[in-house]
Image (cartoon, rainbow, N blue to C red; front, top):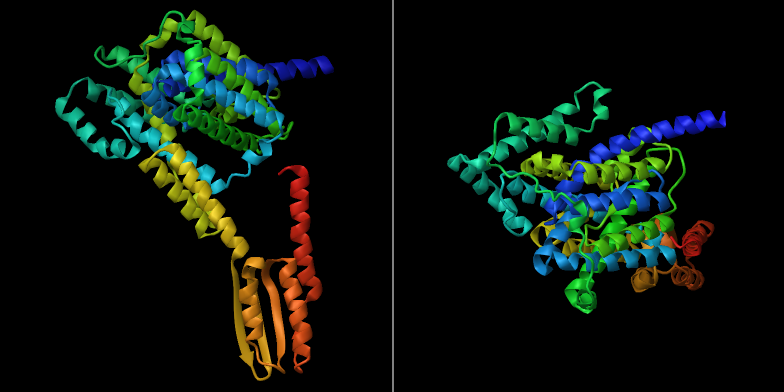
Length: 509
């Protein structure tokens, strides 16, 4: 019985690994090209993410590899500092992740506001879309996100007017996107073949049949390991330079946040083993440190490959490990086949990926938690597109902190007066910060009145404000007045919040 179960599990993992490999292959190359690196750099990252990280991951069904979410950051860094410094940044980012996981800081990365995380992903989606649109026309990104966005109509008009290889490449890109969209209507059994791969295969066939020799194709070396660039002592010493150090922190933070967000999503897709967040963060650190030593792309846990893994029926971590083995075998034995892939087809895969990331499907969910969450989401996107990824994330985090401070310092006091009676409605948080305002409202009430303080809409009250109400009640009675308040409920609000805070500190959440 056990042998049959093991055989069944292995067969499911084997099938899932093939599906994930087919999803990962075009994405590894496309993301690498979008990052300003050779396509084999992404494949090597995928191999490490599968074989090494897959074996030690804290999320068994999550698949790690190069992520579209980091491509913009990597491209900006490579353009500013050169590809030779990328390995240094990724190496130290990995060491930071490893340290964070070792010291059990994984849960803190999950504490980032969902509005900021989704805004970051959507902003990345916009940047990928507008940059890869130009690559889909056999061109290069113009510059910043705004420049790429503004330059899209001009690039398209120029390609149409010229009628040269740029228009042919664009047509191949459009064909790829239409194939990806159309594949969702294929019979379910066919859809085991991933849509991005189908799109690329159709593009390859179309380019070959039409004899499109002038468009750009993937340039792949015969030996994928020729991409490897070991760090030199001189480059290692440059980690103390501000741009390099900030780059390492940025990669570590964004890769960790994206990985743990993905792990949470993967946990919701299956009923098996739950994610051990600190272990997953440490595993990502090991993977990125190795990627840094080899001078290739950074990695994260990636939702597209992880979702494909779960949907294909994976049961254990063997599927993620095997997908890395298939990448290694394919890239080592058949690298020449990759040279038939039009670059515009890979760019088109990323244009579609960017569109899916940028589409604001999360807005209705955020709206349930208030307009401020939606505002933070869109402001984060706008700053990312207008400036850069790090600035957008920092602005989003600052806005989230300001919102938190507002929530803990905002108190509304509404007063309704009737004959001999005053109703005070408290809403928000009654804390030490708002104690003077509450005291002024109480001291402004007439003597010899019956005061009813309503606390139904009060989220929290601290000890200082409870003490204020207690003392005022005693003084008000000496004037012939009275105070009606749910003292038990008021104390309970204080205790509940204090209990939650204590529990959070104890669990490190």
